[in-house]
Image 1 (cartoon, rainbow, N blue to C red):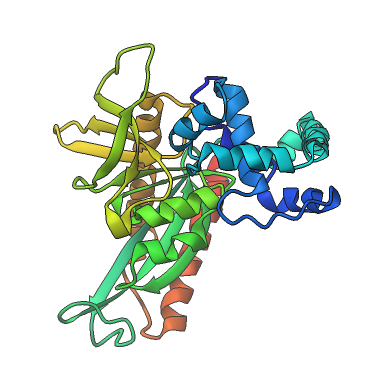
Image 2: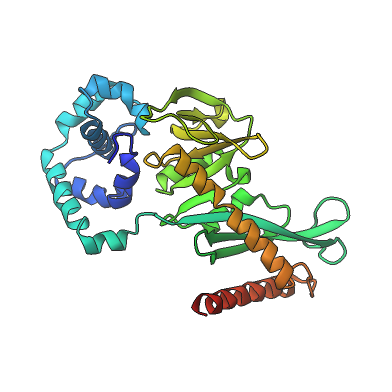
Length: 328
């Protein structure tokens, strides 16, 4: 495992905070802290071991670059003194149990890519007065998550056409997968939420995104292909500033335009991060296919029940055809 691996992501997947809290109660420790809790100490000590930090002072400086919120070294020291070591002994026993083969299969640490996007279906305003868009148009959206490598439909939800994509993103996510999405899903505060939810992601940023305190990642080999930069930073300014630091990979598309990707994956190479994002094209192919082959743009009815009933049935047919094709 590389030292730059975001250990806390994997660790929080296997031992989430909610699962650790009962053990804290068992050892009789009352955790009254708000800023630096017992769980934060646990993550700090884990990073310190992996990255061979020199002590609390050294760790204080390195915390922001490891996805941890920075606190004063004296706070860390005091906490480490107070918390009974029996807690960490019990967590060790729990980790040993979880990391056997059968447990690893049940945990389903993300390996596959889940591509998320929406498609809009428009018509005249008079046909769908309950779903108005600009001018004389009306329309609805289908928000879809698709397993990239297999093109299998994973989750779907519906909204009217003027609903922002990011507001419905949570309804089609699954933190067993790595989320891959375009700029419509690139809200900095949402990235912080993904960290709390243990949701891995590779999401394109807008070209004017501000990088706060950028630090270039150390590489053993020079950047290859279209990759131009590989760094970590906080994203945004002031009110939009992210709480966590994220990895940013910058590359050029075939036309020479910049493509800026944000991710909380730190183990894959920058080249692999770029390859993950390119898988997003699968959902564009999916939308084009269902519109060309399943009569999706031709809405028969005018009520919500009629419209969505038709569209969900069309998607059901897609799933059936995909099954038959895969088994043929």
